[in-house]
Image 1 (cartoon, rainbow, N blue to C red):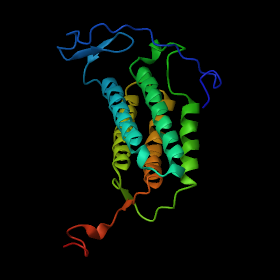
Image 2: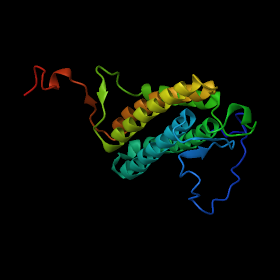
Image 3: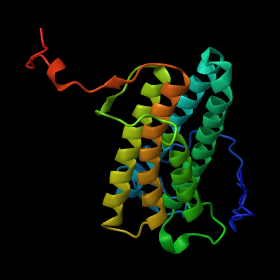
Image 4: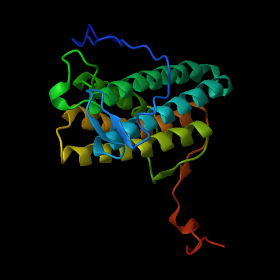
Length: 221
């Protein structure tokens, strides 16, 4: 995997010391952005990067499930599944970079502040293409299921879509970096592809949408 120096992106390393978690500063329903401004906790910017943080947690949960499912994969597929786990870990770091930018007013962003770059979006596209080339074409929509890992990745996908919607909403009232929105859009697609890829690697069956399985359908009971 290319590092940031090879991509022309060298970000500042974190410089912080967390000695106490609670501060009581937020008891009044207000919080501070990374750039120091005080805003309400339900501010559109807080909603956006808070949802990115939620997404990061769900991606982390999917990665843990992947690591636990690794021994059940065939020897031939274990390496590919492990690579997916590494990809999910990279995505967690990228999401934290994204949160850093969303938590900072545009005029206060430092040149070396972590952010999403075009290379991050391109990497997701390339990884999707590799998986798609090895997956059977879809003949119906897919429902979450088949394995816990598949379901976890679908949950992450839906949270990613919500994060994208909130970032777009924020962009109507403030400047939002275009790469951030592009990244969330591609990541939601990638999480869908990875959910199918994980099902393939675990030799599980996909759950396809069957409209007539509804109670009102012809196949209903």
